[in-house]
Length: 433
Image (cartoon, rainbow, N blue to C red; front, side, top):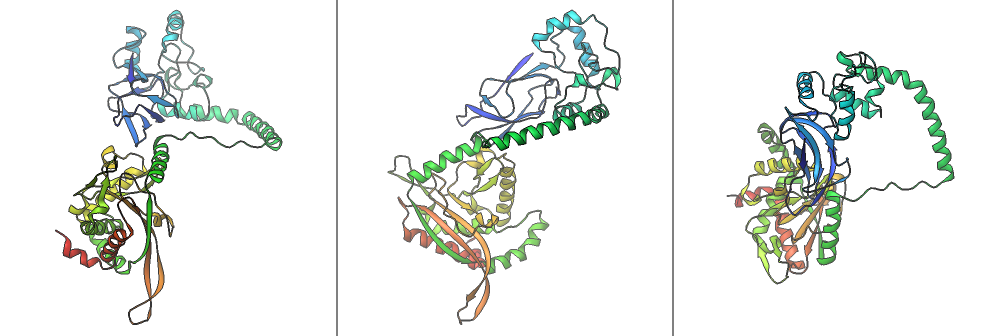
């Protein structure tokens, strides 16, 4: 039997939270099969099996913290057996039709003493080919766990006492009257208790991405003097251009949103005001100007706020940016962003308008120097140059800049350049390589 040690995931991570076990004790596993998902302070990581075998023990429960280089689970290597050759041959002969539960070390002595006893009769609870253990498929075991049952309580009608799904359902039907009565009693007791006592709040530990977000937002808000700057942008022409280009993008398998236009225009505006794409060093005495424009986008994922970034936007076409935006959005919402996609950002966008917000005061994603919050687009009346009222698509935006080296004039000039490209998107053609 071998222990699988939680590997060093990198980035100085020493512990992580077990989010979901994909297997249970006693399950047969194959090499590279997903075993467990763990949440680091960066992203969700999937850990696979190093080799084929049988899971014998899960050391860390779901929702608990696992330590790097500490045992995560134990497994019996395929072809070996903790109970000798006879058990090994038996497990091998039944792997295709059932997955016996693992034999724990503490139970081996007792099992050896009872190995000579005749097996339980077919169809009786607790029957099974391997030392009285109950054979059942992973799906059946999962169903049993979901209803807080034990396999030994259920009469198996399959070969060698194997418990089938039908057996579990029949057992639940038989127990339903008693369960209903018990449930009513529990509800009455709980209601009486709630009337007599004030309900306590649900407590949830702050871990993973949310814990990192809390730490970094406090650091950014308390160490960086924020300067906010708001503006309105008329995106009527931009919306019309996107509608014309959408069929062409879909023909190449890409979904064209406004985000690629925002990013491309931002990279062009950075060329006019490169200090907005710079970063102050830790000592606060040097400015580092980056030639590449790696634009981050805030994504509201199930694991918490993530800001993956599209690398080298200044070199990419709109279709290439759209492809990256789609990939990163999907990965972030699933909590599976690669570490490389979270590093190296130089400026960020928070599209709060996608959720309905009009205005926001964003916090800078340190060590970057600026971030923009994009509000929802509204159709509003506006005067044209002749004084006539027109229906225009107006988008509100709010910039936050690091006021240690970005002043109001700088952010205003940068925003005006960005706004110019978005209000007259055809002008971007003059600057494309």
